[in-house]
Amino acid sequence: MFLEAIWLPIECLACLRRSNFMDSITNVSAIQNIVYIASSILFIFGIKMLGKEATAVRGNYLSAIAMFLAVGITCLNLGIDIKIIISGILLGGFIGSLIAIKVKMTAIPEMVALFNGFGGLATFLIAWSQFNSPNNSFFQHVLIMLTVYIGGITFAGSLVAYGKLSEILKLGKGSWITNILISFFYLSFPALLYVICEPFISQFIPQFSSYFFIFLGLTLIAGLGFVMPIGGGDMPVVISLLNSFSGIAAAFAGLLLLNNVLIVAGSLVGASGLILTIIMAKAMNRTIGNILFVGYASTSSSSSFSEEQGEVKPISADDAYLILENASSVLVVPGYGMAVAQAQHVVREMGELLEANGTEVKYGIHPVAGRMPGHMNVLLAEANVSYDLLAEPDDVNPSMDSIDVAMVIGANDVVNPSATEEEGSPIYGMPIIETHKAKTVFVLKRSMSSGFAGVQNPLFFKENTRMLFGDAKESISQIVSEFKD
Image (cartoon, rainbow, N blue to C red; front, top):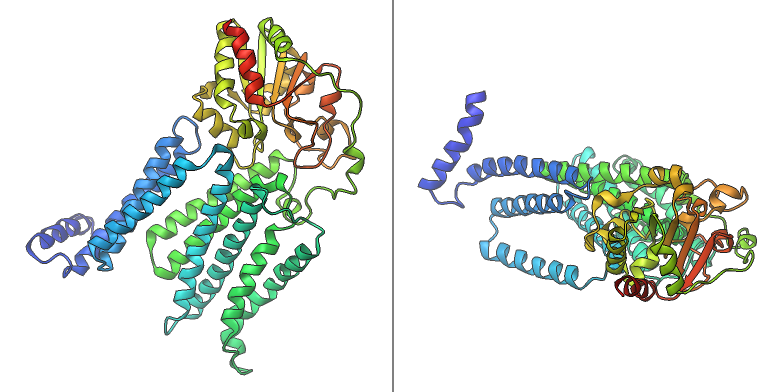
C-alpha cells in the first residue's frame, strides 16, 4: 500500500505528459487530492503562526497560498477554461488589494465583519444550489439546512455588526424594530427543526412546496435579530463568534461537496474562532450567553453611573512633557481613540524618545480594547512598535503602583475602576488594566464622553489623574516636539 501511494502521483504525472491534460480527469483528481493535502498542511501552519505577532504576517501569506492552490486545482478539475480562472484571480486580487490599500485602520473591524459575512453568504449559496440536486440523502438534507441556517445567520448578522461598528446603525436593544427582529430569531429555531424533519413530515401531511424559500428569508431576518440587540462594546466578541460560524458553515459545505480542503479549512476557522470567542468573553468576565442574550445593563439602570463624579484636572502638553521627562517608567494604554486619531506612529516616536531619555516604556494591551480582537496589536504593529514591549493586563497590574506615568490614549471601559470598585456598575467584574493605581495618570480624550458600555469613568476624577483634552495625535506630537527641542 505504501509503494502504491508513492507510485500513484508519479504515474499520474507521466500520464499527463503523454496525453491531453483535460482528458485525464482521473489523473487530475489524484493530483487534486495531493494539492488538497498540501493546502491543508499550509492552513494548519498558517493559523498556528497567526497566534504570535512576530509570525502573523507569514501566517497570512501561507494561508493565502494554500487557498490559491486549493481554488486553482479545483477549477482545473472542473474543466473550467484557464482564461476564466486567471481572469477571476486577477479581478478578485485587484478588488481585494484596492480594499486593503484604501481601508483606514479605524475601519479594519468593519472590513473583518464584512469578510465574515461574505464567507457566510458563500456557504449559504452553496447549500441553496445543493438543495436542487436530485436524490439527496437524509444526511445531505440535514447538512443543507444547517449550512443554510448558519451561513444565513452569519451573513445577515455580519451586516448588522458592520453597521454598528461604522456607527451607521443606531438601533439597539429596546427599540420596536429590534424586538420584532428578535422574535424572528427565536422563531427560526422551530423553523429549522421543521425543515430538517420535512422529509418525514411530508409522508403524513401534504408537502408545502415553498417551505425552503420561506426558510431562506426567515434565516436572513433571524440573522439581523441575532446581532441587533447586542451593544457596540460587545462587538469584538460578536465578530469572533461570527468568524467561527463562517468556518463551521464552510466545513458543512465541504461535507456537502465532499471537498477535503474545505472541511479542513472550515474546521480550523470554526475551532480557532470559537476558542478566541471564549478567551474574549473571559477577558470581560462574562459568559457568551450573557453577551449574546443579556448584554450590559440598559441605559436606565446605568444612568446613576453616567453622571460626573467630581472635578477633572486638565493639563497642557507642555506640563505633560515635564512630567514624562522625569519619569523612570511609563505605561501606554491604547484604545479606540488612538485608532480614530491615527496616533500610533507618533506614539511609537514618543516611546522611542522616552527610551532614549532613560525611561522604561511598556504598552498595556487589553484583549477587548478597540473594536475587534487584536485591534491595538495591529495598530502598534503597523507603527513598528516592538512586540517585546506589548504586555497584557496580568503582566502589568501587579506592578502598577510602581509605574510613574500611565498614559491612557482613547481607552475607556478597559481602564474603568468601576469594574473593580462598584458592585452595582454594569461592568462590575470585568478585568481591566488598573491604571488608577499608577503614581500619575494622563488621559488623552476629546471630551468627557463615556465608553461603549455607557458608563462614566471614575478614573477621570481621581486625584492622580490629569486630563489632556484634544486630538490625541496633535497632543502627542506637541510632546514629541518638546522632547526634540
